[in-house]
Image (cartoon, rainbow, N blue to C red; front, side, top):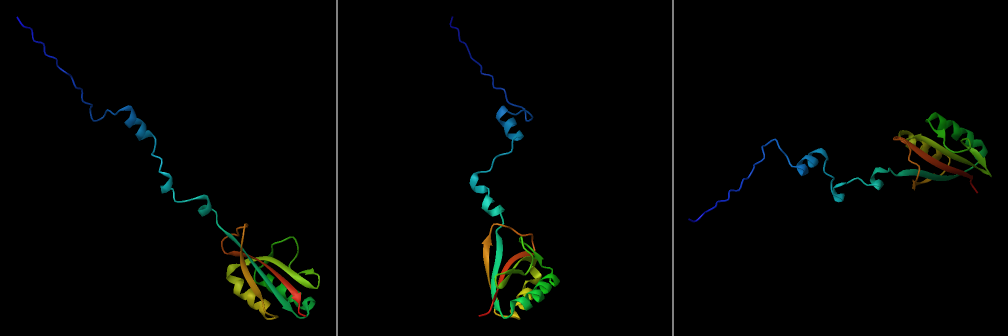
Length: 143
């Protein structure tokens, strides 16, 4: 007699609620985005600061400086450095201040009444609060 044996293979299907260890881990840990998907870099998150640097030559610096100090204060300007506004520097004066950006044009007009004001905008490490600008103006006696 020949014996025939049959082998039955048993396949157990997972129920819809059962998950493999890999699937369970994936659900618990959010995926890490690839490096190219992270659009913000350290350079983007750091705002750039600016400094306005100006110079002007006027006649009779000693008489005009107090008027300019009063006008800067009237416009909401405040000293930003270690010395007071209109600090005497040799035969000239030195203004290191912060002022609301909305008053910038009025400040330029006030100084321009006494001579030709030249201002440049430079990149600077110090970032000012929104709406405030930092300015250094040197006033020299006109020759």
